[in-house]
Amino acid sequence: MAEFSDRSMPPPPIEDQYHGFFPAQYSTAYLEEYVDNHVYDGHTIRERILFNSHVDNLKRYEVCNVVHEGSHSSDHWTVTYNTYHSICAAKIIDATGMTSQPYIPSLHGSHDFRGKTLHHKFFGQEEEALFRNPSVQNICILGGAKSAADVAYAFAKAPGEARKNVHWVIREDGNGPSAFFPAPAMSDRYANSNEGFYNRFLAGFLPNTFGRRWSLLKWLLQGTIFGRWYATRLWDGFDKGLRTLMNYQREEGRDMGFANLEPDTPDSSKDKKPLTIPVDVIVYCTGWSACTTFLPSDQASTLGLSVPLGTASPETQKHWQSLEQAADASILSRFPTLRHPPAYHKTEPTQTPFRLYKAIAPPMDVHSTRSIVFLGKMVVGNNFRTAEAQALWALAYLDGRIKDLPAVGQIESEVAETVAWDRRRYLNKGELGSWFYYDVVDYADALLEQLGLDSHRKGKGWYGDLVEPCFASDLKGLTQEYVMKYMT
Image 1 (cartoon, rainbow, N blue to C red):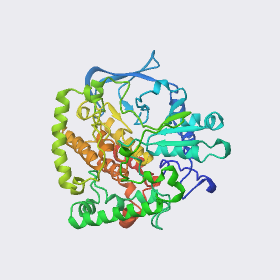
Image 2 (spheres, rainbow, N blue to C red; image 1 turned 90 degrees about the vertical axis):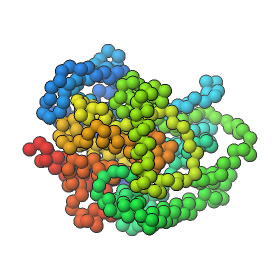
Image 3 (cartoon, rainbow, N blue to C red; image 1 turned 60 degrees about the vertical axis):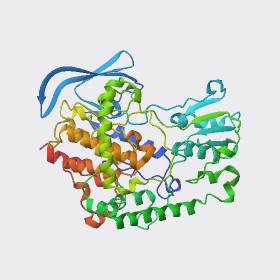
Image 4 (cartoon, rainbow, N blue to C red; image 1 turned 135 degrees about the vertical axis):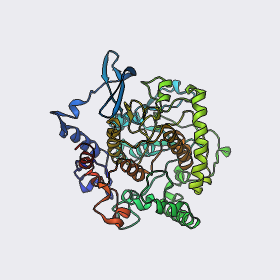
């Protein structure tokens, strides 16, 4: 699954695999090879990349009002980079994604800290030096998500003298540690838990607004009393099985606070005194900033990007709040289970949500210039599959090949529905309207359905299409199908 459909990834050595999972270095090697072996018009992908370049500004200039090959072209864009250089283009594909700008929280006393600090983005570059440094013995890791677990594990499990004392700090007024799944699959049909999750049968148990295929299955599981009872029983059993497997109360981790990682652990902070720990290095595993640095906030907001709450115009906020309030009622009507979330600590948002049509296109641009798209402005569990589906949809959109685009009002209503759903489905994580973590299969299917492409759904039969894992190879015929449909 960790590959593109047009080039298979060589399997890592079996000794470096655990139920099909492997170290990230093999994905890095695959991508390095990928950019050197894809040649277009005599140039590899690598040769087309401007390395060590920082985008300073992106500006739109109105030129004329003409239509070329079905797509409007009434402006152009200028990208300024490295201060003095610029590129002009009629179309822009922003693929900066969600992990470009590290987020560093403001901590009292941080300026007085004399040790080393780094964001987890740079951990790979610093890892070996930290392991070899004998003066670095105590590591403090801030954050509760996957990156924090990876860094904590790397230091705690390092061999011999490279091993460090690890203090993993997760704030008590946040979301707690992230969900982690065991590697083995819960069924012999799948090689690992990843395969067991990315299939259309399990997608039927997920309340989301994407796609039309298997809508009957989703209606049965989400829209009927029996279906909701059955789905709840399945998730409760899944949760119980994972807690049993983890054995949070085991003796091995009792002195190190391992039991506190269990979901729904009562908040005992009122009974605790402030704790002081020795620290040589602080690793901020605190995620990423949603702000776009090369666009002013007013333009970013107009394009549907996330901006600080105080910078969005009151009129814009009022308009979207009205739409999202109506959409929220619709979401709760379709998915009654979302009315009753588990207990959680709600945090107030500081940013507006992303408001992009199909999580790609600015609503105001759909029936105008169609000159800019944003790829990867979401958090998903499989970026490879999403990237392929988004790339094809964006190509068709920029070229004006999607003929059945809804009216602006319908587009805004769909965008508002996605934001309202995300808030209900993923709670704090969904406040930005960009958290689709478990919904990769349905989201990718929805994009390809709108393009009228279905080769990825053939060859397995109806039952295989429902229960078999969604591999990258399933998408292999999409490019040829797209060319035949739109370019011949």
